[in-house]
Length: 276
Ligand SMILES: O=P(O)(O)OC[C@@H](O)[C@@H](O)c1c[nH]c2ccccc12
Image (tube, rainbow, N blue to C red; front, top):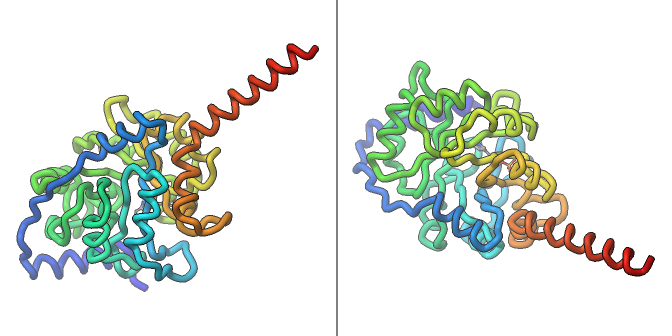
């Protein structure tokens, strides 16, 4: 299989020939969706519809709209939908159907390297990956960021290292995602977020991405400063079962459950005190 980047360049070239109409996105605010979640005690989670990936065996053939609806029922603040066809089994059609079916913001997850790719499908939020930009055959991050905003998209800029975060901020990113997965080696290390997050100023919305599997992982990412979590595998093919709604809810309620547990512990302690 050719590389993700080569595939992206080729899809970009195909779109350049197609000269689609320019998207004029009517976008729902991602940060407001996070605030609504926080206001009712939910951890802001972006749940991801990803039929397959280079690190997954096989491909899920469930109806993506049903998956998405279960995620929202489980309390997801927003959704992420892969539209990359070759390595992730995604499609713009799935994104359109999901976006029409749910009332939360939807992120288009793809490898956008050229402006022409922006017009493939409307979404609330668009992903730009620092690692794949500013090099030969791709556009500049700052130019793409501007071009995406001109079309009405909010933009999530993804970084993996401190220097990529610097490039994201330098280009004017207001929403930054730190990917715990190294896209070259495809290995996940949650310490990536814990280390790199310290580079991001308070006024920037910060998202921890990938490899978040347990409620403890979720708590650790929040502790390290994540305003929101982006979770795919642990919701869709969790070891504990594939009840997507329950898997989403488990992460969404991680903090309220932890508080309840501490309170219960305190109660038991108080009881022990009165009895002694
Ligand atoms: O399935 P996970 O480990 O929960 O990860 C979700 C998401 O972060 C991951 O799919 C992802 C992060 N950045 C990407 C860029 C392209 C494609 C996919 C991704």
